[in-house]
Length: 187
Image (cartoon, rainbow, N blue to C red; front, side, top):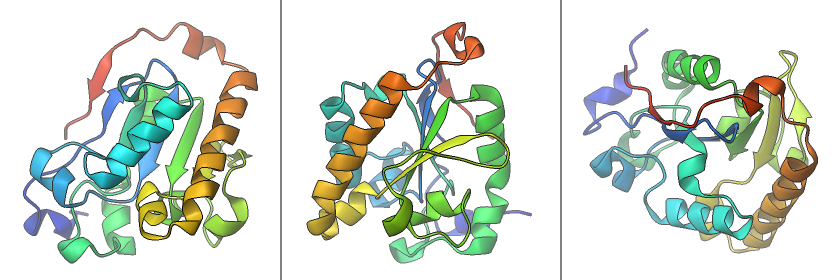
């Protein structure tokens, strides 16, 4: 199934970064700045994400960042279920190639890919395993924290919890041997 979002977007915004750390960030959809630059999380939410990463000692270039859809929805609306489904192939390819040790879902749409019907307010800031054995760490979306200042402290706390989890979680043997490389998966 082809995603209809490509008709209104300037370009696809594929994921980018490195699989070296085994840390995979999954957001919702590209915004205006991402659509213009063709890179994920480069607008205000991306700048805040960079601050959050730096705050826990992570370099953006050492993690992989992508979205559940590859094209910007018109007028920055939420992606529709059929649009998310149409982009599933890209997410599956990323996960097959990178085999991350943890997937940090940024916001409810990304979290909903793994935990249908759950509330981000209820499960954020704690690692959970899927039936497939994937480790998911849901957090609020940086854009939500920019628009709702009350969420900012919760998001900072989520990232502190993520840092603690990363420091104590065992690293799978295959991740220890993974070569360092910069990855962009184009279709």
